[in-house]
Length: 202
Image (cartoon, rainbow, N blue to C red; front, top):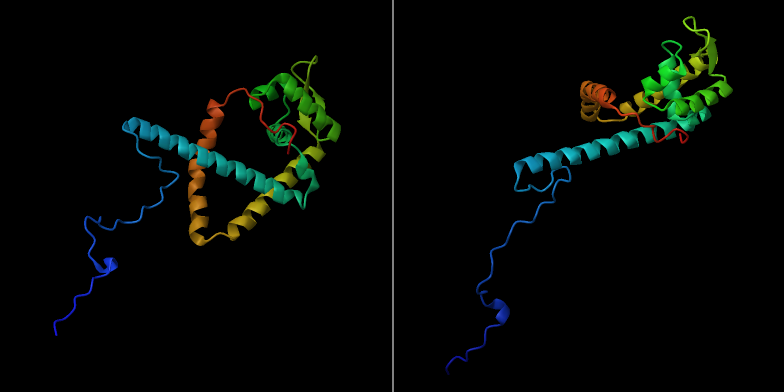
């Protein structure tokens, strides 16, 4: 008896014209923008992405620090603009105009901030030896204490957070400090006379 041939299922037939399997596509690095045809355009795009990332990290760091301190120190609600005035006055008393120039703020803005610090008892008006018609603004004992407490509280919080990092991350943060200090210097040298965005909000 001759063997009866059976049809081969289509699933068992070799595929014709099938493409070779491809490697899975790797996700792109958000800090590495797609390369434009112009190399200078790539450098510019990369600089923008990195600046955006650094801005985001600095903003989150500042907010996280201040939010964590408010739990234990209610006076941390003091706006940063007022803290910066206290820090500037810690070296020596200054006139309102001098304060405005140092902080790159409008004189009327500084006058408003000084008024609130006067009401809080953190600064007072002192006679100007060089010009009896004007007065200088100086820190009171309460102002010095406020500034010292503010500094110590931030140091304790940052030290505690650093201790939770892995040794590699801890070392990376410390290694970045010299560069961040130079960045702060560059920003201070090229800053514009614009009011900060947190004159009232903590």
